[in-house]
Image (cartoon, rainbow, N blue to C red; front, side, top):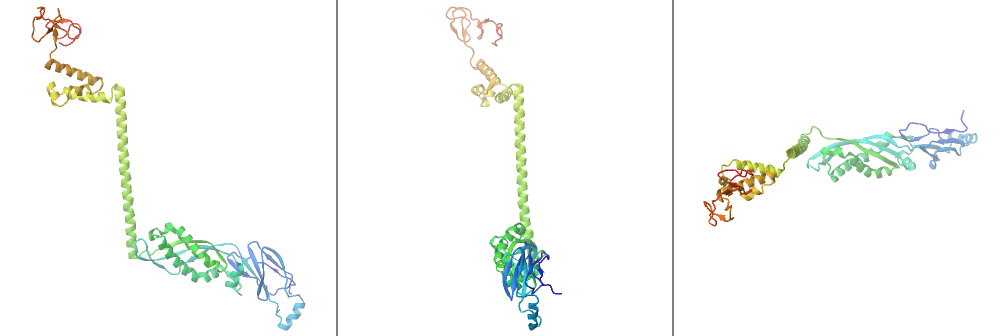
Length: 381
């Protein structure tokens, strides 16, 4: 029993771009249901009349129940008022695989040797202009699946990708041994070049990824340059490691010197002398190693140098040496204890008053007779 009105809808899988409903030449008042992710195109007598978005619609045709059946007898029970509905899936269909059917030939930009590579990846497509896609690719066929769509695009897809790969590698001077580091740049560049080709058929290229570059592993020439490339980087890495080791060693030595200096400074502070005084100790030790002042003078160290060694110890050593020189080179001047007249060396009586000459302590003035040290102050005579 024929239905007076039909319900036309599509609830198929999500790997189909366009699907033609099997119900044709349906009667007026037929209900069309379109889901949110779809659009529907109504064909009447071979013409695409209306496009329907999401919702429910009542279709009007020239096919009228009972009356139409009588008219159909004149045409062999076939209605002369042909009508049909196509559904277009507008969801973004992802993980559509692609791959080059042969190797891409080009000259490697870094080392300048000819090379052959392959490429593969994934892309996602979306029906952007349903009418254009339907009229250009589907025609009167019943459906358009992912596989058939990629088949339609395969010829120019392979031609474009091969050419684009060679151009992008050459323009960006991408090293074959570092090409995996540039897959993102590679993918974006090829996508940009392919967008227009898909758009001409009403299809939007949403994403395009190059996920694998097939290199000519095992080829003697490729392996030779591969070894050269990685040996070069191994040498650079070794030089950097050696430089870092030397730097760490230098830092360790510097830290050791700082620690030693801090320890020496702490020692001086605890023992109550300065760096200049320590140097004075060293000079005094050198002086003590000499048997006479004359030998000290032969070392090229004068009294002024001794006086300027610095610190209490240096001053003490300088004063002692000065007295020793005065004793040997310049005897102390003497005075008469009675009248104060100056007495020359070897004088036994004062030439002014005739008083007997008595030795006097140069420090405290106490008369001393036949002694080596002053009995009052202990000054050496």
